[in-house]
Amino acid sequence: MKKIILSISIILFSLSGFGQALKPVKIDSLVTVSLPTGFTKKDTLGQQIYQGTGSLGNILVLRVPNANNKPLNKEKDLKDVFKNYIKGIQKQSVNGSVMYPRDTTIGKLEGKVFTLRIDNSGSTGESPELRNFILLYTQDATYTFEYNYPEQRADLAKNELKQFSSSISIAPSLDRRDQYLSDAKGLSSPVKIGIYGGGAILVFIIVFTVIRRKNRQLEAGV
Image (cartoon, rainbow, N blue to C red):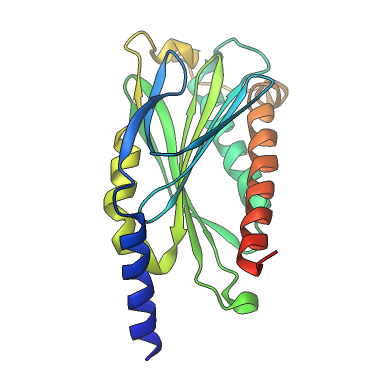
């Protein structure tokens, strides 16, 4: 009976979200991504936050200006920025675990893809949540693209996740030198990485915490 009720709930959710087609939206002059109709945008001190509800998942896009708008020196610096970003996100979830981290490319730029699985089922009984991230760093800004949904809906959400992820496009003028300058290998400067990547991590953590608090209040009927 529980399985039947769960299946009906998923079907009803799908029908209620039907027609929430994703449409291209310019995040700035260089980056475009498709978002659901009726998305909201907040702009605070140059930091843009886009939120929308798709047919089967929730979408969050952040654009955060970097504190020092200069490219990193080496590819290792970029990898360290991504590594620190992922650590910062994971620390905000006591029951969160990072899955499937991998490198990706968007146009001529390098990016990072990973999934954060948050399992509070032991204390709340709710389905674990999957938060799928794509990180993109340029000398001017750090972009975070997130698509999240309950794990029980994973198979149904695959197509919309793919549609959202594949819709990210960048201007042809952006290339690897907008991320780092040299192909040489070597040690990175922790201080520099903190300056370049820290602001974006902090903003995301604040937004992440506020959104999760609001979601819990809605679920509790507050």
